[in-house]
Length: 160
Image (cartoon, rainbow, N blue to C red; front, side):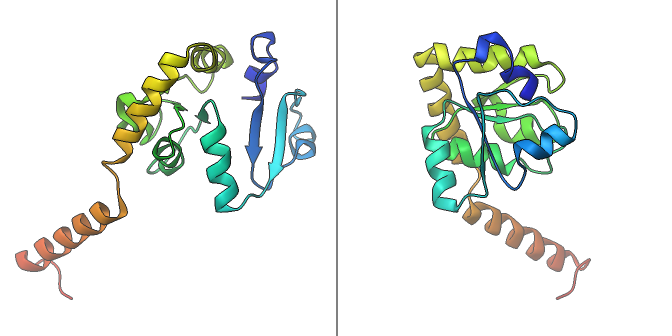
């Protein structure tokens, strides 16, 4: 992402990173941090909601993702997601997210530019994300777990 956001094509777009890492941490690791990358530190849930609702996109260049909750949360808040086609991300996000190769900064540049430059496309991905996120609720997850436990119990292979 740092390489993508150092490109001329994204100089007018900010990358906002949240969490404990700082620019100094990345620089100590040998990464160059471009001026359009902002480190906001740890954020509250309310601040995170505000960041996602105000963002042009949520970028998830993860190489491994057990479920894909971060982009799903973004989509549920109306934020278009850009994901890498790795782990559970494609399965969870389906066609409601744009995919970009995690090893190719050019792919991320293109995906970000598409959403920033085309309001209709961004609106389409917002709508797709909102619809897709409805498939994954805590209520549905609890019901599925309960069905699985009951099925296992009733088959005799599980005891409570």
